[in-house]
Image (tube, rainbow, N blue to C red; front, side, top):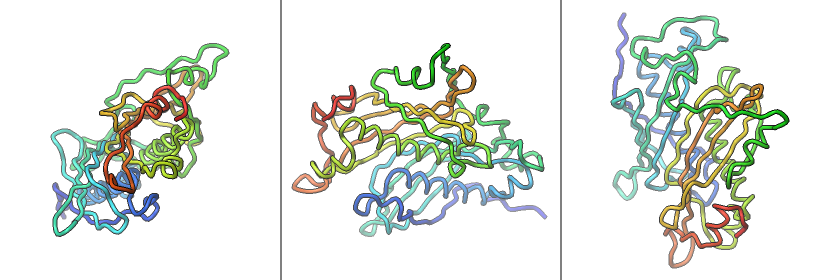
Length: 311
């Protein structure tokens, strides 16, 4: 019997999780990416092999190693999302999420995803990937990453904190790689680092005296994310400590800040890069005559973002 393979595009429908409606009825960027992950897994099933089958029958772990998204419109809690996934010119998948508003289709996300199949050491069976997916098989995460990031050296008597906290205007947060952030009893999955990106932004803003709650209470400003990207560089193992540095790189047009996340784990005297991310973040005015417009970042706010002084 020959399996019929659906090549492209794959179209599925879903709704965002209620968990993502944190401010009014709008969905946060993390849950956009969750919908992308769900759509990509459905695409995989249409190629003839789902994540469960690939692990149990081939010893391969499905892993998103790169996901970049552009969010041109808001997503609401009760929206029915149409997800379309197709193959691009390279290994990456092209994803589009859309909803129906006022009788017309509105694109809420455009994205690209690099999906690989990692050979799992803990699997009891090891077979080559099915022909339709053979080009996605890799020996490990490091082999899948297009980013060449050299380890940082921890000098004698030094610590991860002393090395990383010394970076100009960077904010350091360290966290334990708990099992519910991991895949295959082994390593932090892509969505674990998406959650880390969301949390480190929140912690950074609070540290700088401009927490989300303060901006809501004092200015009626709500967070807006228009672009985000998370890439895996190598494996962060279960229960390792992940040292995460968050740095604002630039202020764009006075209304958005472009920031970078870099994640490391310490092994012997080296800090090994395991993930990196970017986020383009701003604020929308929630009330009054300017409701819906992007807020202008004043000098005190910009100072807090770039240099650490409270606004």
